[in-house]
Image (cartoon, rainbow, N blue to C red; front, side, top):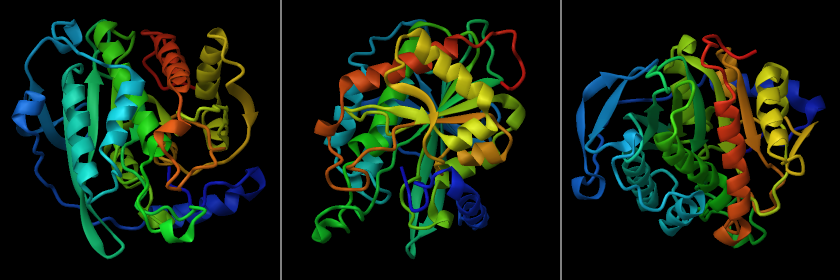
Length: 355
């Protein structure tokens, strides 16, 4: 979760949003790059450039096995396992060994479950250097075999390259582990992938793993992957977008995010009603607490109903203390269950955007 200008309450939002819009127009220097995955680790191969549902061309990864039909042994697939695995790779900021390894890991895991996995590489320039990045998508067809319009579930997999809020000044240029900020949303989505492989959703679902969310220090260097993705997607192919960010906090409290409420009240109600049906009113609160700039904003800008599920009251944000011991398997489970409940409550007869 990047955050130079996130923690503004409602009265400060309009000025912040204008600043974001200025940065939103900053040009990214992008070029295609190859997708390489060790065949022994992933059991997959990279096909020619193809066009996925609603997206510009990307590289499709082909996998053998039954995946969504349940014909392949998935092995460990709970969110806590996925969080531990990410943290074991170390910091995952672009350009680091951990960044390459986590991308390979996500691609490999998605190949065990999804109907279609695509990698959308791009280059981005920040702090005077060029970094190879990529968004990763995984499509799950509906129970009737449909591919669109889909519900988009997203999270960012990169971590912060500097711990600028660390209580110890000497550590403020140190990359963070990002157990909660970067790891938790990815962990929940990977477990949801395993669920969708076993149980077909009523409508198509696409999981999107965004790169370059947390590298910047100003608006023009934030949300690099989600901005690129939102700019390429055909809006008619997306029913709605649900973002997971910082959802692993052991002391989990999720309030309604202000931009989500103002732009997509129907989607907010869908998610929070799902939480209420599951008895999680102690975690999901209907009060608006913050207006946050995050990976959902580029989709709001394109008119796609979008909601940010986030617990921003996290004292270890952008510090070296954002480690596994600050997170909880129970928090991940609650968010997983609420998102699945929300997805499966969408009617297959609803072919339009949610209100």
